[in-house]
Length: 402
Image 1 (tube, rainbow, N blue to C red):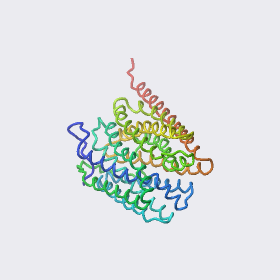
Image 2 (cartoon, helix red, strand yellow; image 1 turned 30 degrees about the vertical axis):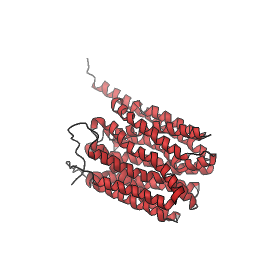
Image 3 (cartoon, rainbow, N blue to C red; image 1 turned 45 degrees about the horizontal axis):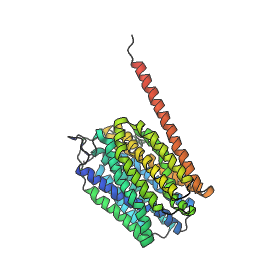
Image 4 (cartoon, helix red, strand yellow; image 1 turned 180 degrees about the vertical axis):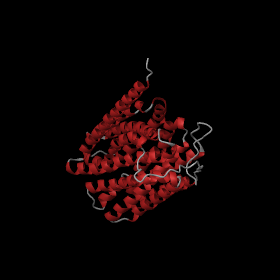
């Protein structure tokens, strides 16, 4: 059965035909997703939903993606990348396209759950295929380039979605978003997968995480909580503050993200995560504070720039770290673990910040988000301390006796 891309490559070339196809497929599914990111909260508001309901609609999507990812991790090894990837993209296309015909919040809620299942399958499979294709010695750099495909979509998708909603309405906008997913499905179908020897060991019943990926995954949880506040409430917050040009936030953020990814992956490959995590986290904290004290357009663009550079440095480094020490037959599960915590952070953030918005106000969302990132810094320092202590104990135990 086809399963994984042959990792025994003859050279360290990144830009192969298959890598180009996976990047194009990633671009189209992300642009479809990003078009709905700022428009769905507005759609929920149009249907009569409250701030808390907006948070729930966003969070239920990520919760369903979270629940499916452990199964996806196993399926990638047992059923093959192609099956999981194409089925996930197909579910995404159908669910997003269905929004064009929605007039009920209950139906929208149910289809968001289904979209989350498709998103969890397609993104985990896509990230794993990219990991398979990229040469091991250039994994940080390659994942940075792979992430660029999603970042370009991020630069175009949110603004395109907002503009299209104002021009042609929600229904046609959602249909075009679904068409993006369809194009992703076409390019994903053109990928070639080579078989390798399959691990015959049965999976344990409660084998739902890859332990070697838990450190970077847990750090990403606190980082991606910020997304819940930005994606769900920033357009509403900017409107409340009388700050125009929200479309430019997403464009500038994506541009900074793309610039950051061109060199941060190489830094990770050469110097490790220590060289990118703390600086990236500091930039994200500064970005959240700019949003918390949003005064005018300059604050908005400054926040977009800082957040883009910070997250652009951290995300590919954490994903490369997550799969770095996983066994060959556990790369899919490592990616599933990483994205599970990624989704959990977004979903919990959207739900939690919906409560914050209703009881305190939009500005407090971003103060809380800054605290979340600070917690990730403390956790990272704890991991470094524990690893250093463990290495010292091993060195002491193995030191030859004079």
